[in-house]
Amino acid sequence: MTPVLTFDGVGLTYPGPPPVLALRPADLVVERGEFVTVIGPSGSGKSTFLNVAGLLDRPTCGTYRLDGTDTGTLKDSARTAIRGARIGFVFQAFHLLPHRSAAENVELGMLYGAVPRTERSVRSRDALTRVGLAHRLHALPTTLSGGERQRVAIARALAPRPALLLCDEPTGNLDSATSSDVLALLDELNADGVTVLLITHDAAVARRGTRTLAIRDGVLSELAGSPG
Image 1: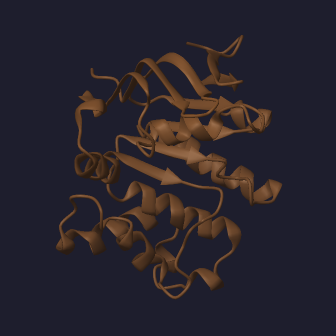
Image 2: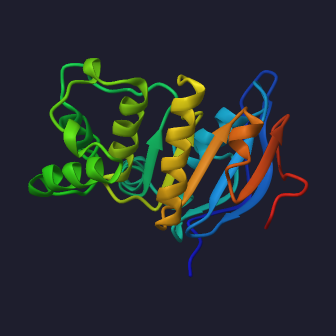
């Protein structure tokens, strides 16, 4: 089976002067159905790794294959299309439009994918039901708790049925009890076959993964004791 994500010597250097080697050339394979966490302190290269994995930045060396597609051969318009269709993003900040309902926020997340307009409302309802918010379809974000807002954000990421769910500090704005609920939801989604790549600075969150990578000074490595 084709891996969801493959890095073959992928790195990124920001131009200078002086040039900054933000992500040193790395090899990485994320198989379908894995839950991989990446841990590192501030300034370690987590954001650069996220931007490269999320097709927001182009690597300056190496080959990045997403779901078998060599992303280095794609023009910007094709990169945007594959990002919208194959990667679901969940951020620390929820990025919900306050005057749109939960269902509408999820539908808007499909505008840049290949989901037909007639399907968007159905997928929105299905995704919100999947994250336990079938009863909050028409609620505005301002009436939702922090945990509910993050669930809407996760539903928005799931609705296009991406190959990869890319989570950037998804519990960073939540209290400990709500964080546990969100992480439990990610566990459930992963158990259902969703491939999760989660970036964090929190060791307790990192341990939720089935495999953990560490990043420091732009160097990505398998964490000692991590399975796989």
